[in-house]
Image 1 (cartoon, rainbow, N blue to C red):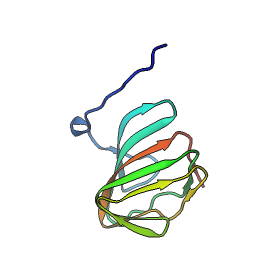
Image 2 (tube, one colour):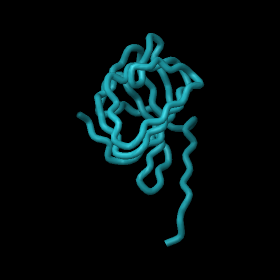
Image 3 (cartoon, one colour):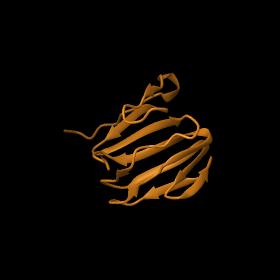
Image 4 (cartoon, rainbow, N blue to C red):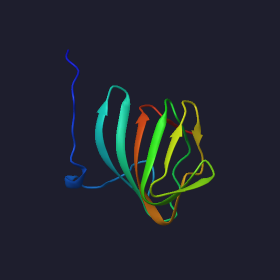
Length: 110
């Protein structure tokens, strides 16, 4: 089978409620192999469930602020988490946040 491309126009997609956390909405973007790309939008002061990364996770903050691994990051910041790291107490800031993430399927909630 020939390797494939996939595309999505995120500006024409609706935000969907994220099933694992209230106050979080998501746009599911293309995925390839075991890598998933998604946009997340958090209401202000929203805590995300703790989870372990099965593979690397990359985040690029587009709007607002968030606490990642105890560090406050802001629009324009990027973070990378190695395989096996735990996301604990991921929290959006007072104005919420929007970020793009790429991660490996199978991250586990703790």
